[in-house]
Image (cartoon, rainbow, N blue to C red; front, side, top):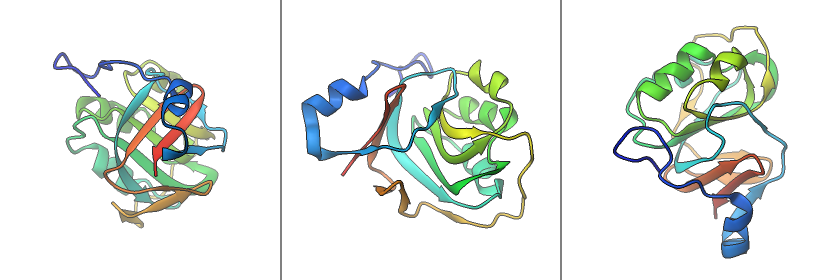
Amino acid sequence: MTTAAGNQPAQAVNTADLYDERGEDLASVSLQFQSLGGRSHFSGPVRTIRCFQDNALVKSTLATPGDGAVLVVDGGGSLGTALMGDMIAESAVANGWAGVVINGAIRDREAIARLDLGVKALGSNPRKSAKAGAGEVDVDVEIDGVTFRPGITVWCDPDGILVER
């Protein structure tokens, strides 16, 4: 959620409190993602990408209006190449994305940590990815047994990731 003033969270939602309130209506991702962006708490409607060591779809999607959405990228858990760096993250901020969850690696983590963008990823690797555009956009993706469907809501904070069932 964002305010009219820009990308500042309208109200930070703590995932622990949300889970206490809604319980089994929510799926919890147990995989231990790192919080790497400048925004610690973020939520919004899900958009998805499935790709493997190729970030062309990530770049092109984050260059479009985000309207407070969270891009969930299933990179197959690969840490072999980065699926997002500082320039793509800056584009996400400029286009109004609330955050990005990457089942894979990022790079430029110090620069990304200074951006008003929520970022969850498995780690970092300075190696660039391919740019062929291989992958799928706006499809159901499964990460750690949790299904992310385009349009459902995801909540992220330092405690973890919750998704509407």
